[in-house]
Figure 1 (cartoon, rainbow, N blue to C red):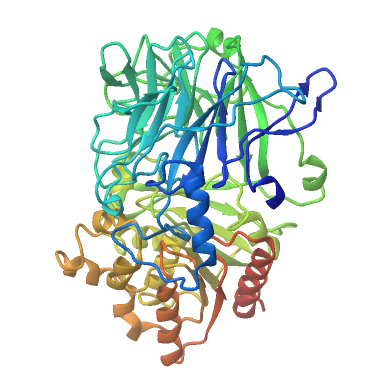
Figure 2: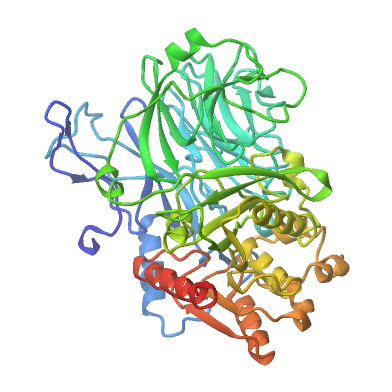
Length: 618
């Protein structure tokens, strides 16, 4: 609350026997507010992040500067470089820094009246964000087991808007000049110390300027400085990971064919990756004895619940079957976990609510796509499905473009809710999608309207021929981000759909370049800038095919979308109106690239649903 100084770090006693919290106490009192808190292993320090003015030597300076800005009658800003805005906010003059606060008296418990240190030390001073901007995932900083050092992620390149070169640094908790320990020209992030303190593991990308390069798990020897990859031949992206307490293995999750199974890799046999459990899993942690792995699991039938896996039992029963491991040399085409018997659901927070809802399973299918390659898709049937009936189709196109549909839950593009009003929902993991090997992912570069578009059309052809309950004369294409781009591309290249929904998509590739923030993205995807490779930008720009636009289209865009500027939506809607193509625009002045506010979300669902119904419902 405002009276407590906004968002601050608080602590409270926890009575494990009674499962009860004590009286909360505020620990930090920094004027720029605090977040991302982390205890040191010995309990003597609290680490947190705060956005500060990099030239301010103390909190009093930050407070004074904020008060001056709030009182200023002129709200204009002067930009001196890139980024000047990012994702959904103008960056301003502040930087995210990592602070550490000692606990006064080094108490072993934290009861009312006990004194805490009041002075927080800035461990990452300077004109760089530490940690850098992130849309979520594992922490980008960690304490060493002896609590004497902090490893963190930061990007110190001169122009961050064209750089993905996050680096790993270490700094003593007492402060001082951070030391860079990573060496890759691509991104290095999410450091995590081994329990014995000998190593630091992190996720590494090899290619500079490419945000969708394969994430490998690397190991840094703190004594020798040597860095080696533990997943060199594991042709999947490493997600979150956790050390085994004995320091001999690391458990990780990685996208694979619409799921995110859990795997293990041994330090004694680097390169060999074992499958542990199937499913769409994340947020890994492990018990102190190393026997039980805990993780979150999501599915098409419901949001996250906590699961466990008895990994000691799994290890004892594990055999070197080809379906369970990736060899130490040679990349595997398919990385498959043998079974899911080790996983057990621990929480059931959503059971009562979801038991009142009719859910349908996610049904995978494979077909031959562009370049004669196998491509995966998924289908969700409506509730009370009747195979003798014909159902209209909602054809969903994922964003990224380096993303994927799969056995997961969403509050924005939920396949169950899309199907609930009497539709068959079809999704395709086209060329460029993740979870099928890096070659498949990278093949979209410079080919946005090529193989991906062909995969989508061939996949829909397959569905129409294979499933007799699909009404091929009643289909609507819907997509956001790259899915919005592809909706715009479809608009100029086929009339097979009765309607289209284009949300936050690229319409003019050249103007989108000038109004986006992370410039490494278009420069990688289109192999240069609009002035160095104009032909590529023009080749794949939907606006240059406006003469073919005929399909009724709903345009959706948010004012605070700085990844794909709102002008892209306005350009598309203006073009549709001038062409007299039936069209409507849903504009959110208070949303960014995603619609996150609950009431806005309700309006989104109703507007999108009504638009599709008006063209597909008999």
